[in-house]
Image (cartoon, rainbow, N blue to C red):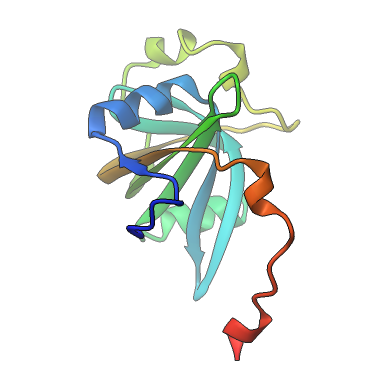
Length: 154
């Protein structure tokens, strides 16, 4: 983080705060390695205890999950006035869900897969690391005029 006074202060979230944000959300992105290629999948999820749980069908995502490689999961959001945003990242190992099935029923209807089709594989991510950030949104006037960053790529 830069020490410039004109930049927004970024707050590093405690693990307990990360879990509160995870519990309040239900849409995220799963990052897996498929062979030698990174892949990203949007998905809806729930938390059960301190695990991230989601359903999936056979395909690229499930094959990558079964490879035994670590994954990353990210979700984010903003407050009601869009003045503050947050982001939480969970890194860990995927595996079959081994928790209490009754906990899944309590999660609610928006935790069910949105895409049609049978999602018969229930996966959990057991975290090895949970991290998060929260910061105030910069005024839109700071975004304009657009900056030309092409010289930075040379």
